[in-house]
Length: 154
Image (cartoon, rainbow, N blue to C red; front, side):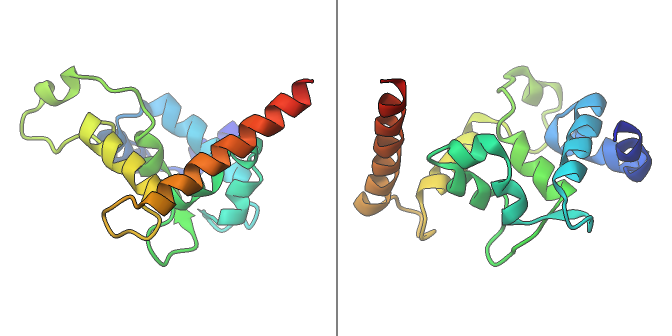
């Protein structure tokens, strides 16, 4: 599977993704391998159903919201570049990244971009506000998950 990943991903694409996301060459090829293993339709894109087969997302009370974050408004497929851009929000913050190149745009994993990304997970109707109902939905999902975990442990 690793050789398939490196042969289908061109070196120029890796370099572009590296600049855009901050991931290393080896991280990109490893994530491409994972992407292709999730791509059950073998069409170079992932669907929501492909993401729902990931066990960690299936058990996460916010899994559906995390999955939705990969899909721009009105889209039902995500390509590898979009997949990587979304994953970049989960990279640790490196304060010195911006100081290396002052003309560069703010990294996807900057504090500001991470906050915007997290905000969008809660702003379901995309009105740039988190309503009481939207917040309650999240709290209820987390509460249900905790209760299920407690029952399982007893």
